[in-house]
Image: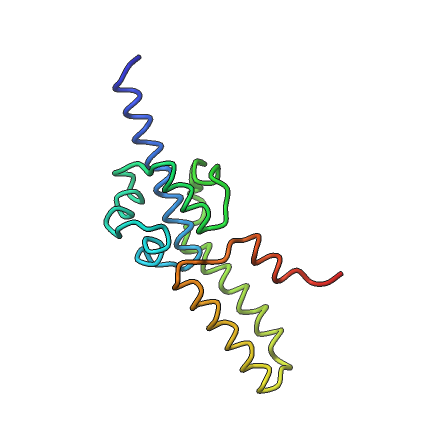
Length: 145
């Protein structure tokens, strides 16, 4: 087997995975410090992984996909160059703020305080390293039938 080709393929895959990790982190508006704390890595080690300079172990990949609430195959897909992660996050944030604005328009002051308290609780949970996964969030926000 040609070790040179294997090394090139591994380096390319490490870059794809690292780029996807960085993009997912940016979309979720997480700092590298926050993600590193959640997955129990140093910030510098996470930086090496995001830049594709070091490969992530299977254990680290599992921690990352759990933190993001995604499947591991999403990290192996070639990143799309059509829209940057920041642009995608900004678009999602803008859509979210429009939805929230429409929802809270008719709330009383007490109800607004409850919403504010809930958001602070979610942020506190996230800081403790137990970020909610996509499935958990969807379950919380599923409207009753």
